[in-house]
Picture 1 (cartoon, rainbow, N blue to C red):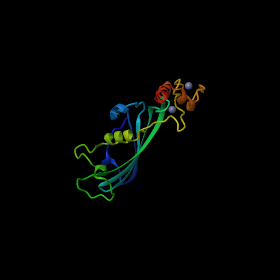
Picture 2: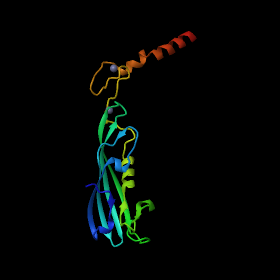
Picture 3: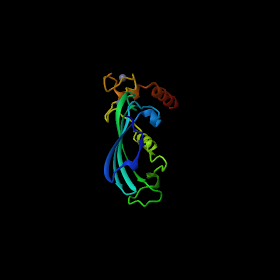
Picture 4: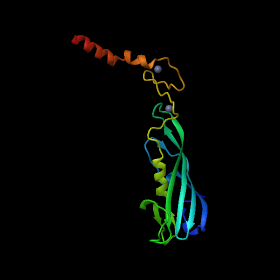
Amino acid sequence: MVKKFFEPTLLVEGESFQEFIWKPQQLELECENVEFTNNVELQLDCIRWGLEINCVGIVSTVLDLICVRCLEHFDFALENKIEFAVRLAAGAPLSVKLWESDIVNIDTGSGKIDISPRIRDAVILGIPQHPLCKQDCKGLCPVCGANLNFIDCGHNVSQVNESDPRWEKLRDLLRNKQ
Ligand SMILES: [Zn+2]
Ligand SMILES: [Zn+2]
């Protein structure tokens, strides 16, 4: 059962634990070079005091990313923290110090909160800007394009620049000038 809405009025006084799962399509996740292949989960810890609920949670999923060095797909385990407070009555004072955007007012009609925009943000912000399949990824050979993580093609990258035809042309130009 996929749970999408948070129903804070059902929470008892004190601490309670909630789990949510979204399909990637439900969060309308989209990002260049990222495939959202797995469900997004939220483990949410809530503490209710009267008309105030403080929530801290971990958003997690596994993404299919492309390594910027070797261009191979790899699985990336994403984890990002979220924090927000729920006010069960408009204008009720809160004990926590949070940004106004992290304070959620409950829909008095349905008693529910759609927290999916918050989850979508947490996922998007958790995507690395320069994804690497591993910290020491050797990348591709600039001469033959071999994946140097798997193959030693024998090209010595430091010598490559010497024999690069563009450098040859430049050397010719310099020689003619002299
Ligand atoms: Zn790589
Ligand atoms: Zn090579």
